[in-house]
Image 1: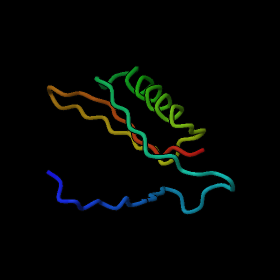
Image 2: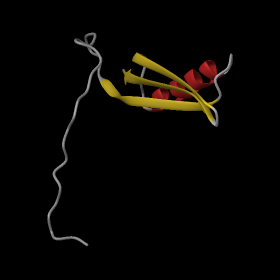
Image 3: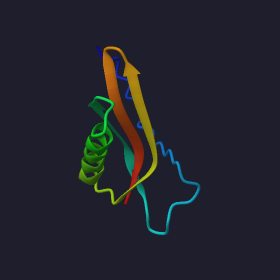
Image 4: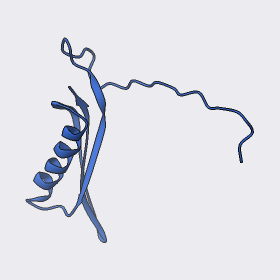
Length: 85
């Protein structure tokens, strides 16, 4: 149900870098997660993260964060990073 009020778009810029290289711009934060915590899970997750960043036009990933959870029923490897171009 609409009451005729339109929400104004808010532009938000979040950065993990104090200063970007000349000509660089952030294109977003990318996240990837795969099942498992083993020798291959990090590489699989990094490949997924890289693919998502490339699809956004990014040429670099900065501020990457790795989380590996080893709960009994939910073992996962996750990566998050800021994508820049």
